[in-house]
Length: 96
Image 1 (cartoon, rainbow, N blue to C red):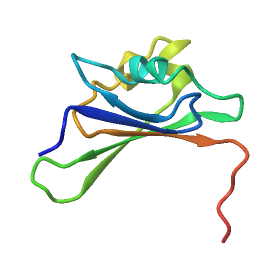
Image 2 (cartoon, rainbow, N blue to C red; image 1 turned 135 degrees about the vertical axis):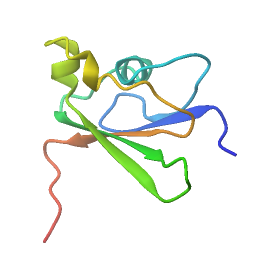
Image 3 (cartoon, helix red, strand yellow; image 1 turned 30 degrees about the vertical axis):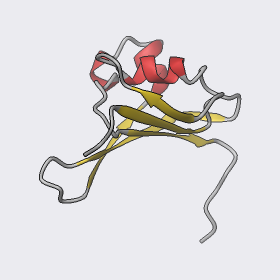
Image 4 (cartoon, rainbow, N blue to C red; image 1 turned 90 degrees about the horizontal axis):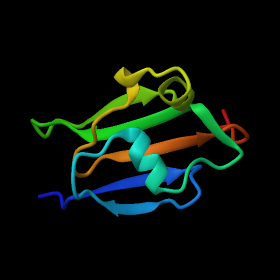
């Protein structure tokens, strides 16, 4: 059983595990983590969620600027216990 927490990782000022005390959206979670770092890839935010049937994880992509600046609330995902939010870096590349 997941505890009632979310995990914010990657290019946020204060990555870590945060308790989920009430309905929380993706934008709220990034605010709780003190916002994005200067090298954050603002268009590459991913939420990983365990599937209800236990069959793996669901990957949901979001663009921070679309949510915040363009008022695209469809990307401001309501978080569930156990969700992992990952903010990519603009400067890190995967080696082939």
